[in-house]
Length: 334
Image (cartoon, rainbow, N blue to C red; front, side, top):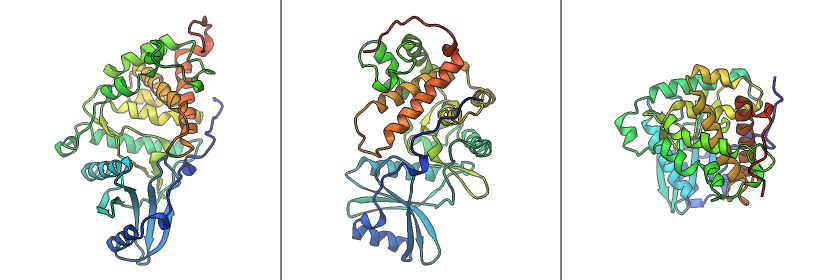
């Protein structure tokens, strides 16, 4: 078994968020009025990388709800509005929390979702948690293979275009339009840059598809409930494309956990070149982001990006046999 690699900060402790008392009083009063009972507890969500409010609110009447809120001046408020529209339109076969209501109060947008009694899967992944997550995602991907018109009407970007415009960093670096990111300098990336760029360029055509993908399927966007059932959260970035791309994204942390990720992808029918292209594109995207300056979001976002980028690249190197074959040094570190 491969050595297990863990991130510096657990994914259930990455968030830096305002607390309930930090919300404007008028916003708190409006939320309580919609919930219909005074609060007995407010538990801030520990996972995630935005700085917006997100908490499970429990009322004296014994009810609970998951509430997100952000100022209208913050782009996060638009993300929450999009999440509300998408989750309301998901078919019943998709195991995800549905919205109860939304409102705008004192220039804040508020989204109230069903509260899921669950936990983010701990790393290293257990095989039980991973199997539950893959079952839930498989059912969701099947149900979303032909998205209903009301989902399409929301406006879903196309995965190949996202890959070309936002996830082609190795190609830009190979053309000297971007520098090699500092986090990548100690990896195999400088020596394998031409191959990484080639895999990246071939990916968009391989990842095309008519189904709706989640677009951000990570370990911290999953909750495991007390019955062992997995729920998929944060439906903010769906797109149209091949569902196995999301599976690759999810499995990067499972690879770091020492699990057999390649056999999972074979069961999904994922093309080998597509998987390798996805790992190339993901590693470039994450390592470039990890090399940016301090984040305006959670201070732990950069370590998440570095960890994910390094693991995606290590998995790709194992699949391609790059760790076992000598390679002349061509593109030198700057």
